[in-house]
Structures are given as C-alpha cells and as structure tokens.
Length: 143
Image (cartoon, rainbow, N blue to C red; front, side, top):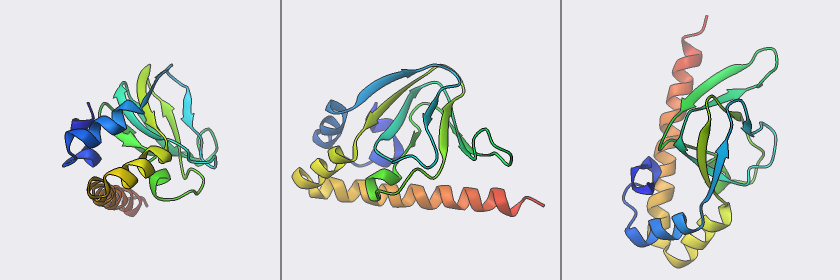
C-alpha cells in the first residue's frame, strides 16, 4: 500500500518495509475525531479506506474545512518535521481505516537509511508546498 502514497514515491522496498512493519491499523467509526487541533502531534496517518475531513476550529463558530482525504492520502506529516501541537483537527466522514506511524519510526529510517530519508523529506516538502498553494487559493477566493 505504501508505494501508492505520494510522499513515499521513490523509496526502495527495504525502506517501505521498515515503515510498514511499524504501522498500526485503526478502524475509525464515522464522526470520530482522529486528531484534534492543539493536541501534541505524535503520529503520522495514512487513510487506508474511507474518508476524513481536515478542519480548523472543528465544532466551533467559524469552522473551516481545509481538505478531505481518501485512500492513500495522508495527514499528520508535520509531526515528522516538528514537535508543535496539531494545527487542525481530522474527523472520519465515514467508517474508515487509517494506518499510523510514530515520528520515532522516521528517526529510525534516518539512522539506518539516510538516503531514503532524504527522499522522504523532499517529498514531504513538495506536498506541503502543494497543500499551502491550495489553502492560499481557497482563502484568496473568499470575499
């Protein structure tokens, strides 16, 4: 499954296996909040099945949906790069299956396969840039 996830593009089989061996599967009922804005970011997630919504101010006045993600999409990648609190909430829109990995797994990848880790970081940077452009477009189009 990992070879279909955009930020893992270009990683070799050994690196993908290292990550997959440490992944944890969670079945998430519809409506469940998976991560909450402001909480510590301690896991990276891949959507295996279903659909999730990424929101700012979830359940509050001024709630804004930033994105919806389905199979092979991912969220929580910022926890790989920094230890700041979550900047948005993610909620299951339908019953979903997600796979998660801790930042320590990525540190282990860095320690044992630094070239593969470099590819991953470049892919994350590209995806963060793409997502930032999308959010800019969304907010620029608002009156």
